[in-house]
Image (cartoon, rainbow, N blue to C red):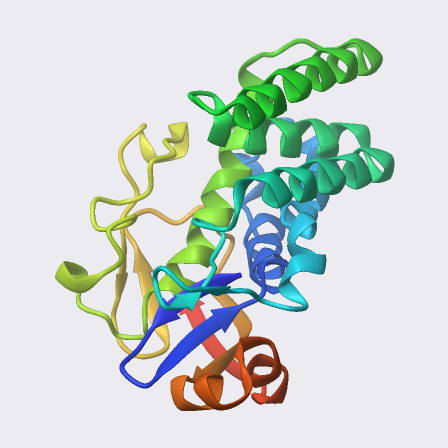
Length: 251
C-alpha cells in the first residue's frame, strides 16, 4: 500500500493501481527514445505487473502500532513482504520471462545491501533466477537491459510522485524522494536529472518529457478517515471508504 498522511485521513493507493499509471507512462514513451523497441511489449508488461506482489496484502491493509498509521510498502514486515515479492516475480516470469527478469532486477536492487539473513537470502535467490533467465533468453546484462530497467524505475517513480504528493504541493514541501528530481538518467535528456513540479492541481511539468504528447492519467485511491479507523479498524475502514480519482496531466 502507498500511504500519504493528511490531518484527518490517510490517502491510500493500492500498489497494482499505481502500477497501471506507470504502465500508461511506458506505453506513451516516444519510439525514438525507446531503445530495443522490439521488446516494448515485454517492457510494458513488466511495468504494468511490477507490483502484482502487493495485490494480496493490499486487499486487507495492516495497522502499524508503532507509527500509528497503516503499513506502507516502505515499512511492511520483512518476512511476509519478501515472500510476496518472490511470489509476484514468479508469476511475472510465467507471463513473460523478459518481463520477469526486469522485475527480478528491480526488486533485487532494493536488497543489494541487505544485512538481515532473509534479505540476503532473497537477493541471492533472485541473482540465481536472473542468471537462469539470462541463459534461457540467450542474452547478457548490457546497455539495453539497463535501459529497460531504468525505464521501469522511472515510470514507477513518476506514478509514485502523484501518489505521495497532494496535487499542487510546492516543490519545497514535496516528498523527500523527489525534491532533487528522479534518479534515473537517459541519453534523450543528455543524462541530466529530470525534475517534476506541480503547475496546478491537475498538471505536472517535467523538465524533459519522454512522452509522445501530454500524458493524462487517472489514479484511483481511498481517503480513509482516521476517526473511522479508530471506530472499526483499518481493514474495515478501508473497505468502507469510497474510491476517489485523481486526474493528472504530465506536460
